[in-house]
Image 1 (cartoon, helix red, strand yellow):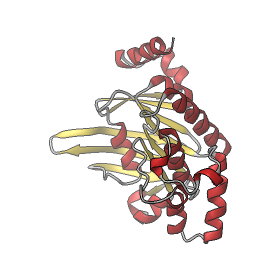
Image 2 (tube, one colour; image 1 turned 60 degrees about the vertical axis):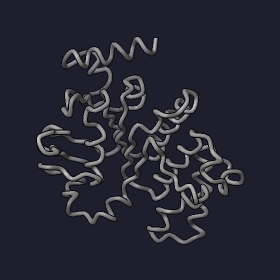
Image 3 (cartoon, helix red, strand yellow; image 1 turned 180 degrees about the vertical axis):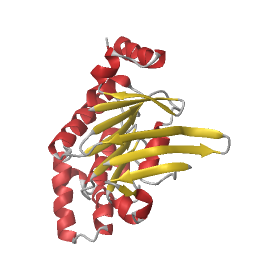
Length: 244
């Protein structure tokens, strides 16, 4: 899916992402985890060219992403933010229809897919399709955001701390839902969080980051058994303490 070769991102004398070389496999649930300011969001935004690297090369399916037309790249990349960013003047159905409309799908097909995905995410279309974002709870808004990111059938889903602003019940429900969607629809997911418990629950592999540097990559079990440094060790210890 993605290959990063000596990729880094700088702003003047400040480096947000140190030189990074790694691969993200097709079908992975790849979780970037670490403290705030660790470079996770910078990493994520490089994958859909919301940011451009200062140096290095990013390949997607062995193709330099700079050679992919930006519109095509974005339409084939689902993106879910913490802030959700639904358009307040559009109904739920209208928000969901944006990407398939840009892809040229017929109105009847968009309506069918909208109904299908609302059901999949546990929102009754007869109740929610005509509502506006202000009439939804935070968890419901985030479900709509997830639908909007998936209805165009992207091959990759990028998620930037999508649940951190939600109440614990909504957060738990959406974690389980996203894990199920990853499995059922064979999605490739790159997910940002600072919650090590969330990372361990969701990720097929974790990428531990600190101060813009990739510290360690592996399964949760591998990293916990052999932490690369004290930061990684303390991160897992904090997670164990928090979730006891």
